[in-house]
Amino acid sequence: MSNDRKQPHFTELVWESTEQNVPIPPRNSPEPALPKSSSKNNGKTNSTPEPSLQLQLWDTEMETPEPVTTTEGQFVTRAKELVEKTEDTALFVPFKSYWPTYGHMTGTQSRWYFYWRNEVRQGRYLKTDLSYIFLHVYELINGVGWTDPNDGYRQLNLIWEAYRESYKRLDQYLGGWIADFSFVHHLDVPLSIIVARSRGLAGDLAELELMRGLTTAPEQLTFAVLTAMSDYDISKSKFYIGEGNEALEQYIPQVVALINAYVTRKHGSNLVEMFPPGPAVMRERYLFRSAVYDISLYGYSVLIPVVRISKSPPLRSLITRLFRLTENKLRELMGYRGRLKGINVDADMDDLITRFLKREYLKETQEDKGPTVVIDPEKLERLQSDSEIVRTMLTVENMDEQDYEASELKATIGEIDPIQDSKEELLPVEVIEEAQAVSIGSEAEQFANALSPLQREALLALLDENGSQALLKLAAANGTMSELLIDEINEIAMDILGDLIIEGEDIVEEYISMLRNI
Image (cartoon, helix red, strand yellow):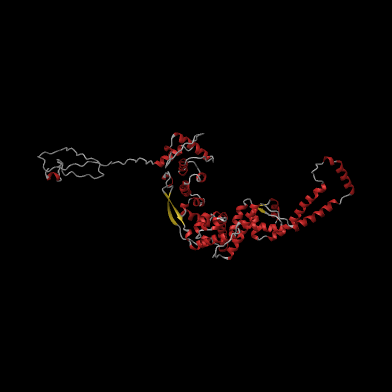
């Protein structure tokens, strides 16, 4: 072969046409362009020239676009069609799918799903595969299966609670999805459980829950959320790892709420107002990640204002000290050797926390042991003396009446139940009851005088229909806690009346009339 064949070769193509100088029509022109007359026409004139044809590359009229149908949209449409479908009975069939939908199930799997879903709606959480659970969750987050968002939120939480021990992956997804659900439906619900169960979701959610708790709902603060505010890693404490775990998780949130109320009363500002953390930062949160979710329902994302409350150094320092101080107080109450060093708090705070923990812890310990009977010797002696006086007055009767009663007693002795007390034997019980009434009446004034104005208001609050809520607000407004007020009132009642006047958050029925009088 010659070298010429190895070289590239070019070919020139020439397109010939009799039409020249054809103008391009405007894009909006409906008429095709006509060619210009040729300068050389061989002497012939075309009176009716044929118009040239042009290939149109676009339509002159816009067509209505076809609606875009997504897989997620199709799922929601199908879910709404099947929302009421149930099965009376079905056999469990395993089902595993990464993004489960109705089309991924066989007929027997579908029958089991609709049977199982109906059982779940009735509160019966049968054992099943994870893919069935996710399919039902997808329905709920897409608005299928509920009419009130609060009911949807409730159903999601119940499913999570019922199956999280069997499927740890639920903690990875459901916490975030439930939080998203609360955001898109503007639900005022605590996020503390979500933060506690889904460690990977701490951060924005923890900040939101801290802000809500310290400003509007201090009684709902939880140990898990507050740990984000503490520089003290309590998880490494031997006391927390051992016997103090339950007590610390119970009392630390209560102590923080107590101090928040105390500061509010003393300074007129709560902890967040005293130590402002800075302005809110708008955070974009992508909704229902990794779920079968139709974005046409609530959008692709939401903007959430997040205040970095945990970044406030003075507030963080105070919470850290409250963690350590509470641990020290509980160590002392529980007889644990060793104390944490270097805890500096206001003396009033220290005294308030000491009194609160002592009363609450000792009260709970006493409840675990059962009720104790406390006898006041002086009161018992007074009752016995009153009983003897009344007995003497009642037994001084006409001798004829005594003889008549004796004869009647002998005549009917056979009809008397052997275990029934005689009239004479019943007298001490009646006398004691009468003496108690007299005693309570005489001590009511002492009890009333011993109460502080705040304690009187607390008793008045408990006499109302919504007593517990009224007492809670009263305590918060005065920088204390309802439990402390109840303990203080019961302590006075024990000293003067020899009895508790409040049980739980209810006034003992026998003292209601007395309290209304005072």
